[in-house]
Length: 449
Image (cartoon, rainbow, N blue to C red; front, side, top):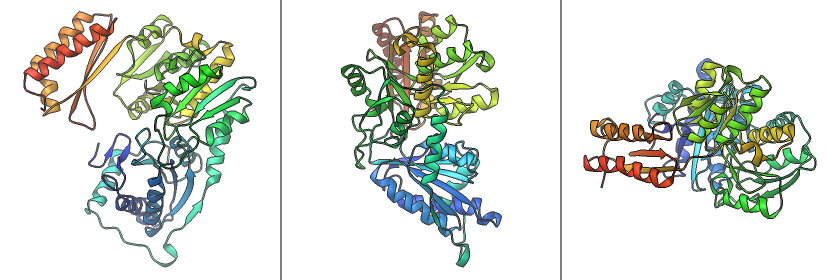
């Protein structure tokens, strides 16, 4: 991670941490890097979510791009995966998504996507940061070299067509609930499900610039749970602000996490001989119950660091075709290069219809272990992690749990925090073992009081 960009873009409070000046300079660099630097005209596509500040950042990015000679193609309000898809299939030099994902409305972010529809490489990101900090000089273009903006809502429509083409079954007579989080999916998701014949019930589809993710969407799925049960729906799907993740709700109101999705679709692929390497890709935060369920059906798994970026890197290196996070980022490598919440919902629908089983039955073999996660603010993450006494405390817990649970201690990527997580048979055991490790961290003087 760089000075400004983390694992998922440059993110922070709008005009406080991330300002319109930052956006102009990012646009200036990208327009020069992909265009004027190579003595050519470049094309860069931009999408945004429904935050009020997204409009400011869109215009700022366009200003910077055009000043450096690039043509900016504007998709308007659309999802992160749609920008990744259109960048790749329509031959753009790169893509930009303006979104802070599941964060509150006053935050925003700028995500950079390369010409292959993947997250931008670290080398290019570091050069962007150097320009932000004034370490590079980039000339302004003049006369006929100045760029222009192009309305590119056609790209969003092309993406909708792509999603519709992913369905192998009609959704006729299926009652589906959609919580679009007052975010980027608010028009796209319903259009796709309606086109496929579903009886669609939509909630939180009135964005006003300030209500994205507010008590709705995948981070507040309890409302969809109630909505599905009260309306007698067959299934519900909840997206986050930029719709790159999806959680589901079965007909009984139970939550279907990203771990459930990996099991349900992984088994479906295995049964059809489509699960390359007989393996799915998880992160270290996947629940122990997922691994138990995968073991029972003979599916293997890789574990990566937390972040869909690392899941994708594993998939590219190994050829594994299905991977994701418990939070709902699921990557279907055959179809896309990033997590796509709407595609995930379509794939779960496919399994329901192909097997003619309700979602509750498909998810039943995944029995989640109780999990307790606590964050500890520390003076130095490496010193706390590498302390021999802390490591011994972690090893003692792992030995006590045996094959009936697990402990994970990891550093936060964005805060001075150590995360201690335990999964075990009971929540009481989880609390006991988490607190035992935290007590040692505190006793050794690592905690920031």
